[in-house]
Image 1 (spheres, protein in one colour):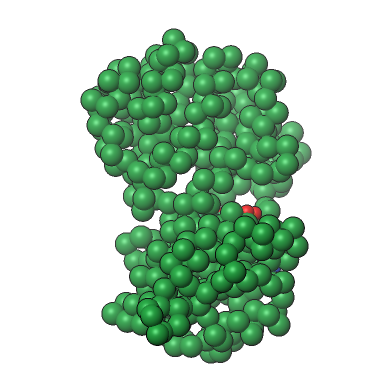
Image 2 (image 1 turned 30 degrees about the horizontal axis):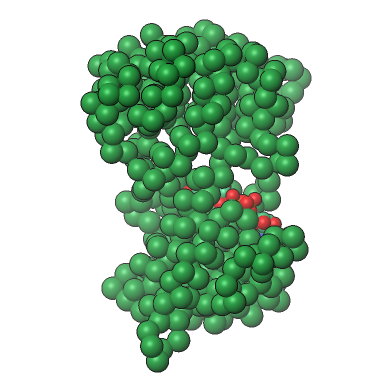
Length: 366
Ligand SMILES: NC(=O)c1ccc[n+]([C@@H]2O[C@H](COP(=O)([O-])OP(=O)(O)OC[C@H]3O[C@@H](n4cnc5c(N)ncnc54)[C@H](O)[C@@H]3O)[C@@H](O)[C@H]2O)c1
């Protein structure tokens, strides 16, 4: 198969769909890989790195789309790319169709085979191609939180690890899923005192088993949240209700109960956030302040660390990319139930029910 790696042209996206290591594996399996010139630079990979791994470099994005059977990317195609996509071409990337009617209609029109990273699903209901980005965001949440706790950027002026003779900072983590556990681990590593809340006792038991004693678990309810927000310096929002808006566990009135300079990093912002006052921000302008509480709610946190994020993402996408290239998309999806769930739009037809439901299109297109 001929596999193409275009440069990401969405604003502020420096990740790339494949590393030189991925190219090496595909070439080893007798596939041809075309990489757009400069596509890897934002993630630290030069054209020469890709060439040494066996790829050929093409000058323009149009050439990559025109010459490839399968395009492997990171973000959904943007408008400039729509007309480059060809009938029957495989697109393997994040799509998030339910959030964009325009993208969905464009992919129906282009009649491509759209396999979405975010809906590839394992037997136990986990989403293997989303997990690494939650891992990155969870770990980053503590780095960002620690930074914004500093006084010059309006935080409380607390050092999370404390020093001998001074108590460490306190971190409250809402949700003990992927984001929450990674955040708790980083905060604990810095020496902070960590409280982690969840409604899922299995997750709390797991955290209790694997974390050091200065990470304590409690059941998530309004009473406990109201109690802890008064004493904690940094609050991490890592709650997810699959397919739904995150619940507002922290309401506007609660901000007044917090110490001035408390920092909230609401990682769940991409699902509406678990804090009533959360609104999406960008890496250029990541924070805002309400009632003396610093809010950090960047919707694409992994974008700030493209080297790590590209590696983390391509580690998990590569086995599926190889399967698609080796077997073709039909046989690959027949043989692999997880990959089958990634099929969203096939040759102009929506095959993933949640997209139809999101737009109320069931009758029109089913
Ligand atoms: N901002 C970003 O850049 C970024 C990056 C990656 C992930 N995310 C988002 O972070 C969120 C968390 O992702 P995840 O992978 O950790 O999800 P996850 O499913 O692994 O974990 C979510 C946890 O929330 C818990 N939960 C549900 N209701 C709760 C409640 N009322 N109180 C406390 N806990 C509750 C669940 O039991 C679960 O353990 C998602 O919205 C995800 O999209 C954002």
